[in-house]
Image (tube, rainbow, N blue to C red):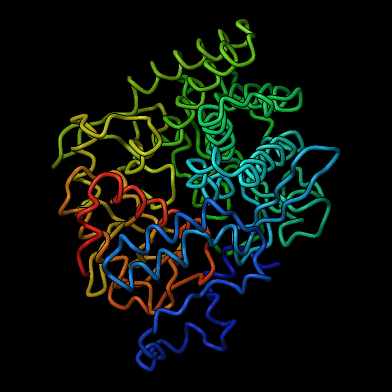
Length: 477
């Protein structure tokens, strides 16, 4: 199995006999004929009637044939290609890989099925599939709450020699706050959509106890941590300084995240967007335990933890920028040091309204947003092909499709949303799919042809546009 890093170096284009060393190949591409790029019906991993009906309805509403073709390819990509659904001991179980890496990330697996939640009351099979994702995520957390990615049972891993407590079930063991928040987001969304509490099993409750324990440990109030991580690598952001524990922090109530949702190491270990995501998760767990499970004692524990985290965020998340006034920092250490930037991967500062962490109209968020799309953000890039946010993971001048989609999802400006649609249409490199990152001056230089998170998120974006500004889908881009 290849790692994300290896795919960044070679790109999935190598599958088609093309490598990133030959960067002029795209000029020979034939303009797409808009024939479906989906697997043949018999080769699809899962078929949902509700999803198929949604695709047909949307194709009628989208006037731009190329955009409609992209939606048809992208929206069902998770179901078409990367889910393995089965019943285990009478319960649904769904293993979800990321696409071109044969492992399940807790983050990606939630994001990849999230847009289907709105359809599950009309499709029992789809509902069971997502319940299976929740059940599998529960098993993963119980195996190791510090791991970010898992194998489908005991298996080999390219990272088995990492200097941390690896287990055969783990693909990778990078501690990221969001890895525990995403399963909570999915379980909460499932419950609120269906009113079905069957997912809150004893195993799920035990997993949430582990989440509580892990979050508390990573406040590091006593100055210690049971988690450390080191890797023999020349890639700096894959390693962790100071014996694998990360740079020093002042224990102020925030939660340490040694890695970002990009799987890159943090510089200052208090990652602000992930702490906001954790606060949202704590509020959701308070509601679940008080209302769905009738466990007021546990609900109160989560409520008080959330209050403590919220106070710490109020005190340490916002800082004055030379050009933009008070904005959210990306990372802090509790000593007064802060990092002004953003990364395309979610949770990001850009995505805070999408995660229901911040009101989109809040002044500090709008100040932050101005900063994010300026040259003051070191990972914002503009070029001949497009503009958007990237991150260290894919390197300089590489724009992530996820950041463009997220800009559209969090925008309240119709013209900005229109621009995002236009950029997305112009940067899929005639493949009909979203990618991880593309070069700001040439969208044909890209990484990962099979990145299901970006594909499904694109589908979610188009569906939201249809809800809020359907007239935009009647335009030709």
